[in-house]
Image (cartoon, rainbow, N blue to C red; front, side, top):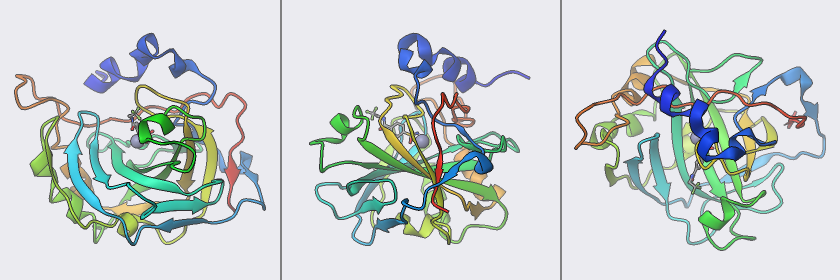
Length: 259
Ligand SMILES: NS(=O)(=O)c1ccc(C(=O)NCC(F)(F)F)cc1
Ligand SMILES: [Zn+2]
């Protein structure tokens, strides 16, 4: 079947401009639960999001992103594999085409319908997000799988805003949204050292992937597919879908399990 636009301009050709695409700690990966090591020293993660300040929602041509104010430690992730608190910067999603799965990480070769990434940065050791994004312990991304089933009671707050950011480069206000409403009931996780999954693919991410997916409806997921990869001024309208990178070689890395 014809590989989509993202598959032609996307992952298979990234290594030409970003040789790190073939590096030793690339993401995503296939997580094989029984091959992960349970590390009793690995504590629980804590998400202090109650004082978070969301700013806007934007279509950056790769995904739809909700950005947060990060002038202080008002909203952080801490604990687990992290030595410092990491500040919430943004969250975004990856998804498939109609009926196709679209998560980035897979579990025993199985992919989920979609994957939510909450991106945090180490403001203790680095002065800016940009600096942290190039450091080996600069970022911590919390990955949450989305599985289709009933409507998610809060996801409509995001999907209702998507028509405002249909075109690449569009942005609209998105205040007072707390992503805590998008978490599953369990915070049990797998963790490993990896990278950004889109160019420049910096190997700067401590990945924390939750084991329990959240449930959203096919209808809600379908609204993400009305977004476009292309800008308002472009002739060709290319639907934003299948914006996920496939799993990358583990290269001997250990995946640890919280329990
Ligand atoms: N899909 S992901 O791995 O969570 C992911 C998270 C963040 C970024 C990002 O900020 N790129 C811009 C930067 F940092 F300047 F390179 C890209 C991908
Ligand atoms: Zn992502």
